[in-house]
Length: 346
Image (cartoon, rainbow, N blue to C red):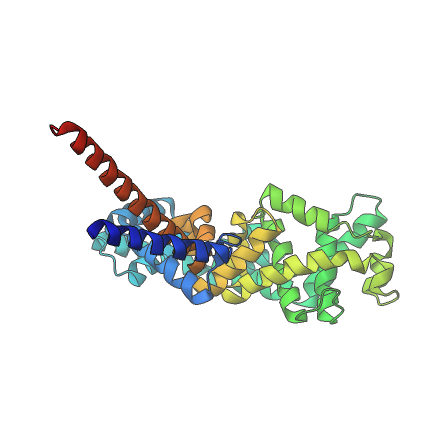
């Protein structure tokens, strides 16, 4: 009777497994996590990683290096996860932050940062001084003016910088090829331009943007376009501009969820257009804490957290495992019975 019940249970599990398998659960075994699921997954991963043993030496190292942005991020992690750190380390870190805030008293320092972002001392200075100018149409016009003068001198024009500026101006005028929010695309294109000037774009992503910027640009008509003498279509092929707009739109989602300065730093984790879309999903789930998630967990672990096995795939795997285990038990019992019978005297 016991053997019959085990066989019946095995047959039932096998039938259920085959029925689930018939619904093709492994056709799309991996699905994207929802924003809430992704946020919770990242929180769990961070809670396991950020401990006193992990945080204290890194905060001491950041203080020794006078790395103000890293100090600020590590202190935020300390408060977020309630980590105990030696008082003298915290006091030294806070002293560094207070000393770094003195740049706000210098209009000259802010003006220098606005003109050349590589001279900015920290992310908050970029946010306060450089970004407001670059996010305005004046930033795009200034980029086109520089390119136009370069073309008049017969020198090589930075076509990517020009294309991004034209995306920004086009979105300001609501002249969008790919549709969507003009404000969103404007923020993304300006952020990408600034990130390139800061050197935070990876070589592979720079190549991707360079390919997207091949829009049949006519540099000789830039000055005429900025003065309103010719339409955008006279300067480039607007149909080819759509891919650059889509990338700008995805990056703008990152900027909206974090900030423009944080977004530019996060571009260090981007190698292609697909990475920008993944980064946008993470940013919308983690918000201002996105940079710390990448700093602690790394790009590979963060991007892996954006997906999970589908419920049907998990069910199929569990049922298959159970059926296999039951089959092995039945075979083992049969073989042991055979051995026992052969060993007993007749």
